[in-house]
Every structure is written in C-alpha cells, then in structure tokens.
Image 1 (cartoon, rainbow, N blue to C red):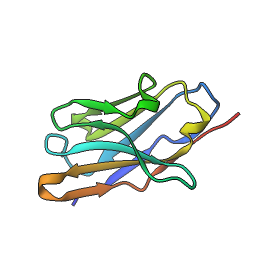
Image 2: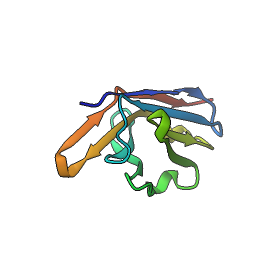
Image 3: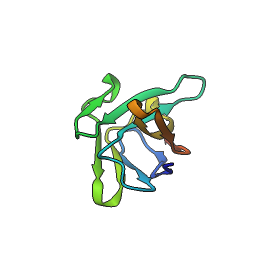
Length: 117
C-alpha cells in the first residue's frame, strides 16, 4: 500500500505560479509512473503530466511550456511547478502512482487550485 499526500494548492491570480507537492509514504519512484491529474467542476478528470519510473516526462498540450513535473527521490516527493496560470487551470489536482503490470494504482486526496483575479 502507498499513501500519497498532496499540498501546495491555493488561490492565485492569472499569470501567477504555484508548486504542488505529492509525498509518497515510501520509496516507489523507481517502479511507479507518477502522474498529476486535474478535475474541474462539471468536467472529467484529465491527465496533466507524467514522469515515468525512468524519468521521462510528458504533458497534455494545454500545459506544455507552463508546467513542469519533477521528482526528488530522496524526499519521495513529486512536484508540479505551474507558471503563467490561467483561469482554465482551476481544478482539483490529484497525484497518482501507477504500476500497470502489477495493477497497483494509488491516489492522493487532491489539492484545490483556483486561478482568479
């Protein structure tokens, strides 16, 4: 079992920045792909960014060039650095750890990001 705890959300003005953190309860990054999802009110959950166990990263088009996913193996922490935030980035952001071959799939509780003037 793996527990994931997100933090770092909040209210920010358009054009501002936030850094989300996701702390895992144990060292898993060498085995799990780590993902950030978001879900806006009335919309389906969407994948925002991925960092694979090998360290490769991918982003959904709307956030490319503005968001960066990274990890600190020593701290068991994955980050989502968000720049130039827009109102359409408003959502609850969730951290996910997945190891598909072993059908292991863990979620954090989410952290709210609100972009508004």
